[in-house]
Every structure is written in C-alpha cells, then in structure tokens.
Length: 165
Image (cartoon, rainbow, N blue to C red; front, side, top):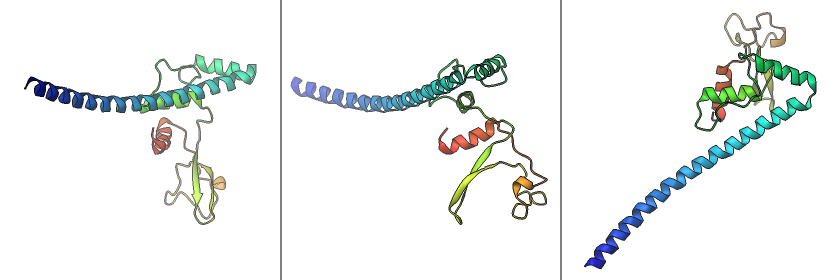
C-alpha cells in the first residue's frame, strides 16, 4: 500500500512538472522573440550610427547638433532597451531615433488594381474633402488646395499598427 501511494504521489508530481515545463517553454519562446526583435533593433541602430559616422564631418556635426536639442530625436541609444513588450510610445521614439527625413510631409503607399501599379504619394489633409479636393479633375501636384500632412506620432502609429507595433 505504501508503494501504491508513492506511485500516485510521483505521478502527480510528474504531471505538475509537465504543466510547469509547458509554461516555461511558452515564456522562453516569448523571450526569444523579444530577444530577436532587440537584436534587430540593435543592428538597425548600429547601422544608422555607422551611416552617420561614415558621411564625414557635416553629417557628424548635424548629428551632434541634434543631440543638443531635446525636442529632436537623436541617434543616441535609448536609456532603457525597447522590447516587444514596450509601449507604442517607446517604440515610436525608437523609430524616430533610427530613421530621419522630412517631418513637414510624409507619403502613403497606393496600389491600383486597374493598372497593377503602385507607388507613394504625399498625404494631403484635404484629400477627398467635398468642395475642396478636385482629385480626378486636377492632379494633386497642381491643386491649389493641397495641404501636406505633417509626420507625427499618430501617422507613425497608424502605419506601424498595420505591421504589428
């Protein structure tokens, strides 16, 4: 009878350990995906820093100037690492620190089923507004009501949420 109780106790313990093992495997997989994301971010950050440093003193001075203005993103590393569990605000801050360009306008990708062509066009805040937008009759480049939308955190979030920010 003691042997039978011991077997039951051991079987129960094995089941408990198997449940714990399954949980740990899921956590490990999540950590590995965060780790690979972190390595990709670190690689992109290194590439951006290398790019800036390889362009000579003009770009280096511009990068140093940007580091002195707190309102502008810089190529300095973030104080805390950004992972897949970081907030969207932290991820957007990282994105802005790695990629630079115009902030007064940004482009949206389009695709035409009819012509099977795709491209990018500047985003206009008046696009398709009745009585304002004359799309179809006047090209956007020649439109007198054209008002380019500035690149802001909302635009980055909307774009990144499509790919899983």
